Image (cartoon, rainbow, N blue to C red; front, top):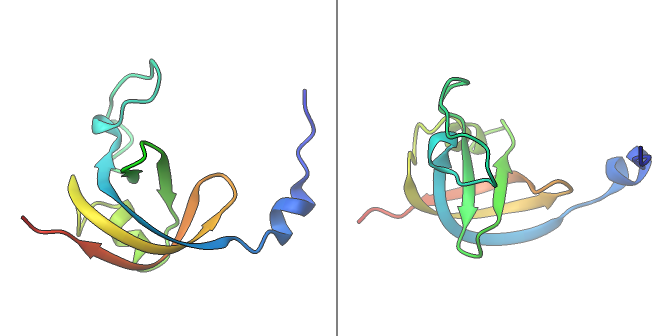
Length: 98
């Protein structure tokens, strides 16, 4: 089993990013052969335009995006601090209404 360098992760300052994508619930994310399910609740993640999946940390305003309250399956722009593990400390969420 590989060892994880938690010290490096704790001290990683992250990097500022601006991403565009769709705020999708687990039932709408295609991740390998994992089944689509909302049994855990409608917890949302940003599927960016480049196909990567990012996880919203549950601090405002990211908490509202995580819970799907402001952008359920909606296109969105995010300004955030990107942390290891594809986690986003969301600073601003702009829902793109069509």
